[in-house]
Image 1 (tube, rainbow, N blue to C red):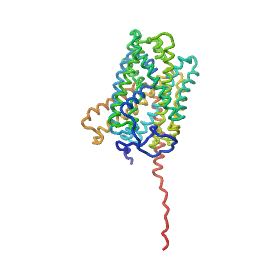
Image 2 (cartoon, helix red, strand yellow):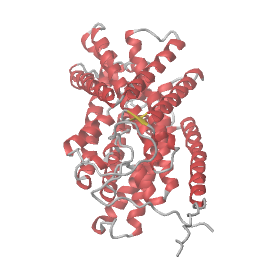
Image 3 (cartoon, rainbow, N blue to C red):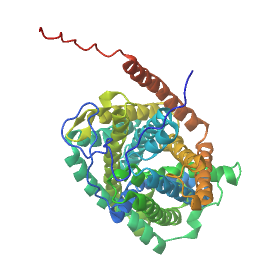
Image 4 (tube, helix red, strand yellow):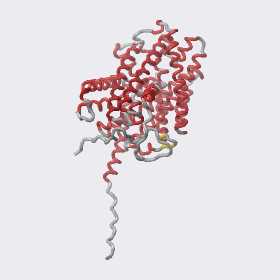
Amino acid sequence: MSTAPQAPTLPPAGTETETGTGTETGTETGSGTGRQHVRRFGLPVASALVLGNIIGGGIFLLPASVAPYGTISLVAFGILTLGALALALVFGRLARRHPVTGGPYVYARAAFGDFAGFLSAWSYWITAWVSNAALAVAAVGYLDVLVPLHDSKAATLAAALAVQWLPAAANLAGTRYVGAVQVVATVLKFVPLLLVAVGGFFFFDGANLGPFQATDGGALGAVSASAAILLFSYLGVESAAVSAGEVRDPRRNVGRATVLGTLAAAALYLLTMVSVFGTVPHDRLVDSSAPFADSVNLMFGGTWGGAAVACMALVSMVGALNGWTLLSAQTPYAAARDGLFPQVFTVKRRGVPTVGVVVTVVLASLLTVYNYTAGSGGVFETLVLVTTFTATVPYLLSAAAQIYFLLSGRADRVQRSRLVRDTLLALAAFGFSLWLVAGSGHAAVYQGVLFLFAGVLVYAWMAARKRAAADAPEPAEAVNPAPAA
């Protein structure tokens, strides 16, 4: 007879057990022991963390990716922003209940047990390394502006692989090099975005917008499909919740930082998308591999501006890959510390989970090779839609965990005065995530389900090992003979 899974015992509020947040240094193997550490992030830094992680490198190609649907994609962006804010508020509520590092993984495991926690961690990990493959493809589009590669598929593939392995090498060199790359990339990231967001409105031409709906199949289908692609731009909304253990007063600041960071990112995204739509003719934007470079070239004439933007965008995307490579290695590291991933993922060198970095970049490279050699068009869009599906799994589980906590009626978890409002908010976040799954399309859901179900075998293996270790007989204690009288 089986029993219901027991929710794990979480640390009390105000403490945290380290679970792979990247704060440790030196060489580490095994699970280690938990220890308290000082929280460092206040509200401004936590908000900047959310903003910086949301605005990665994907924005530099997304205007061209949604252009085939027409300007109706701006409607999709507005709906997506409302859904992202619902998720942000749900993550804030959950962080008040579980103010520890781990985010969606912690919430799913606390509500539904180890298997749900594993699925959340596994799916989030897939999202991270598939996103790396998508960012590499986007980076090659801007590299093509500087060094023409589009005539050779082999050269394009080689460049996409190089863009992935260089940040991996920086990660393997240690956290000091990761930080140095990240500072430069963050500065250069906002220069072309602000240039296009502000400058574009001085050159805006409504004739460039093209048709409102450029595809067949109805407005709802176009909105759903473009929203599924645009969700890639909001990956990172959970950043403050994932890092809650390092946020000062997380019960108060995680929710606020998540909302503030999401709103700031939404404002910048909307300005840049409208600006690109209004400066690059629609028929040219649909086929563009570097829409921001095209926009600047059309604003100022010539190619010098586009080349400069391409350089900054390329550095920005390499920086985003640098950060996401570390993040994608930390996720299996945290799960391995809890015994849900193989222990080899806990190996650290110079503060970096080295096995996680290597496995992540190998998987991303294999996926890149497959999508380039399979002959399907729109490699970036295909990869982005896969991440949309895999990202919604931890989002769905988090929303479901919030509903469970609210309806279970436990006094330590439910603020009864907010019960109805919080329940409606969680239901909205859950329904929004389901809508995104529907908009991902059959091909993306097919690949995503294959990746997700492959993890079930890993969980079965890890669960069997834990059960065998628990059932193993303890070694007999030596019996000391009584001393002679």
